[in-house]
Image (tube, rainbow, N blue to C red; front, top):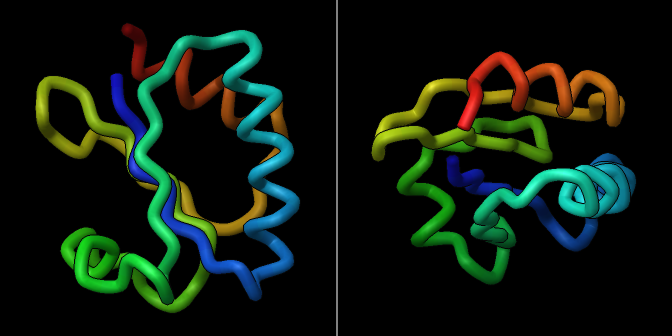
Length: 86
């Protein structure tokens, strides 16, 4: 599984979710590609992130299988990961 994480430096929800995502990564080994909407705009726009940040795009077998937007709890993220499976 791979996750494309789209955030912005000015986004307070993104800062909160960065901390939560790092906690997830302590438990799960997930390849993560982090993109900043301002600094990596061309790459980020390829994933059509929309207006609400952060965006976590879960990729399995080179296909998007789940997308979550905005703030979520540690438990919610783990549940999404468990439902997708390795």
